[in-house]
Structures are given as C-alpha cells and as structure tokens.
Length: 368
Image 1: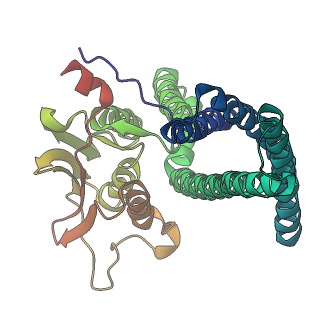
Image 2: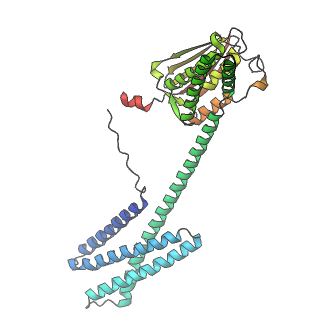
Image 3: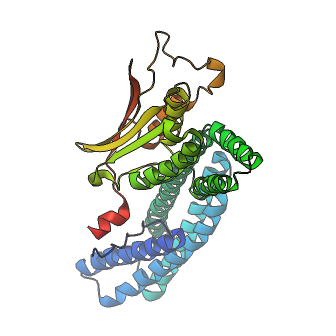
C-alpha cells in the first residue's frame, strides 16, 4: 500500500499570507542587518533602540503604502508610477523625520545638525522604501503573469474539452434509429420478449453513454464491455450474419483510452461489411502490447476500399463522413503526437490500427 504524498502548496497560493510572511521576514532581516552593523561599529546596545523604532516605523508605513499600491496597480501606468513615486518620497520623508527625532532625542549632546541628520535618514529610508516598492511591483507583475498564464491554460483546456465533447457527441446515431425501428417492428409482430430484450440492452448502452463524461477515459476492459453491449443489440438485428470476436491481452486490459473510441469503428464495420453481404461478416477486435504502447486493431472480413478510396456497395449519401476523421481527431486531442492511426485495406477485409501510450488505470497501479 502506497502512502499518498501531500503535495506542497505554492508559496503564493495564499497571497495574503505570502505578503505577511515576506513583510515580516524582510523587515526582520533589515533590523538584523542594521543592528549587527551598529554593534560591529562599537556602538552600545542602547543604539539598537533607534534601529528598532526605525524598523517598526518602516514596517507600519509600508503597510499603508501597500494599501495605496493595491489601489494604484489597477490604474493607468502614468498614474500608477507617478503617484507611487510621490507616495514613496512622502513616506521616506515621514520615516526620516521620525528617525531624526528619535536620534536627536536620544543623543541631545550630539553636534550633528538637524538638516544633516534628516537628509542622512531620508537617504536611508528612501533606499529601503524604494527597494520595498520595487519588490512589491515585481512580485505583483509576476503574479499577474502567472494568473494570465493559468487563465490561458484553463481556456485552452476548456476548448480542448469542448472539442472532445463535440467529437464524442458526433457519434453516428444511425444504430439508434435502426434499433428503434427494429423494436417497433418486433412490437408489431408481437414478439414482445425480443422487443423487451432489445429495449433493455439499448437502455443500458445509452445509460453508459450518458453517465460517462464526454472527455473521460476508460479502461480497454470497460470499452470492450460496452462494445459487447452494443453488439448484442446489433446481433438481434443481424443474428448469425454478425460474428464478432475479441482478443484482449490481460496485460493491457487496464490501459486507458477515450470512452466510446472504438464504437464508431465497429459501427462502420457493420455498415460496410455486414449489411451488404448476405452471409454477413466477421468483426474482430484485438488489443496487444506494443513496447511502451498498446496496439488496438478493429478489422472486418468485408470488402476493402475500392480504387476511389471508399467502401463499395454503400452510396456516399448514406455515410456521415465523420467516422474515421472523428477517431483521428479524438486521438490527437487525447494523446498529441504519442499516437498512431492507420487503415489497411485488402480485397478480403478492412482494418483500423490504433497505437496509444500504455497508460494504466490508477486503481490497478495502487493494487500492484
């Protein structure tokens, strides 16, 4: 049993907490730096009092600046930068005045002139508050870029999911109409048992298609079970003319693929191989490992493609023209370049070969 790891939260996941952490650590570091410099210059411990008061003043003033900057950051650049500079200069003047007053109060016998003392404190305050403001806007710019990137990624994912959903909903509905017509015919012939059986299987199949998310992935085992349910419905229409078979290697049974990916391929095989031939046809579905991939093959024993590249015996007007392109688009959306889609045609059959990454079901990984 694998113990789940707790994923660490990004530092800026909670912006408010990140601000207070940086604010506290930053000013604490400034106090330690200035305090250690004061002690290193041979000053008495009492000289740390002005440094502490200056740090507390800077801490408090930058909180007021942060409120102002939050308001300014949404304004036009010329307003933001102009008012920000004025705010920093005014705040530095206030901090310098307090620093000079504290120093002169503690050192009444000092010969340092008041203006000279103020200018020295103003230079130091301007440096600290300027660096604080630059860091504030730099972090804000970084977070804005990150938010825009996240929004763009979200929009791209939503667009991809919408396209996947659209491709899923393009599944050929002919079998539904044919099944309903067959049920109607059985009811008219008073074959109620067969009609009820077909209706029950149709209900189960439609329930599966509605419950599963259009963008969800299922295991090959689940996909095959759904195919068998679909084929049971069709077999009641075609009886012995429809001869399906499945060869699924247990090693890939839990590999994942987009839901209802194979149903249109089997439906095409029924349309082009079983329907035109009086004796029907065989439809084979196989899934085997292929290195780091899984190879899925859907083949039939019907006619292959003719010289025009289409199936014979079926008028072009009867096809929707979305089957194979739909499957190819869904594979690209789901796996990008890590997939392969190929069709092969011979006089004695037609096959579709799909290779996708061997992504195993998460539950089977944990059990292993």
